[in-house]
Image (tube, rainbow, N blue to C red; front, side):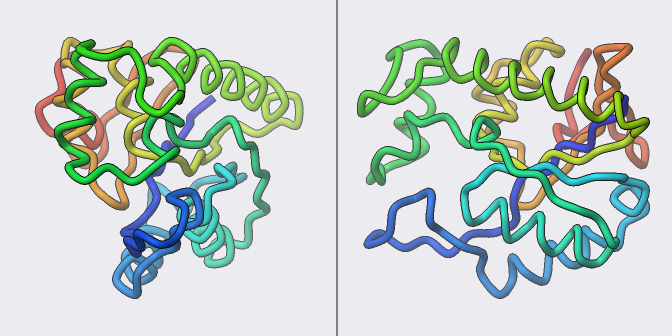
Length: 195
């Protein structure tokens, strides 16, 4: 199975709205539309998405442009440590979390809890899709959970990976080989990745 992991497009930061309800900016809509027309995305057979608005909006743009269905799963959501409240200096808080200086913030998930949740959803998704004869799906999700998942397959620290993932961004993952694949000469979204 080939999985195209997609980080949601650029978001509309709004401190009066819960983070999970943030939608895309006009630029984010444009970038998601451009991504939907890429060759990598045009080969997808099904789109799965987090229930957070920014991911859903990205997924809808991709699915609509390519005539695909969308399946949602709350377990593809961001690490709850980052969604329970808005941090005044997000990068500082994220670094302390990813470098193991704290286990969690705001009664949110630890790295182990978040990765376990995400991996279980991913395993179930792959099993269902393979049962339907599909071999190429997309999962639209979030930067921190993608960095955490991706770090299992690289020599790079989670914090360094997290800093490199853009909005939107993609990476191809082969579930049989358990490795990321090259896109236009890059292994994935982390230009410097070492496997």
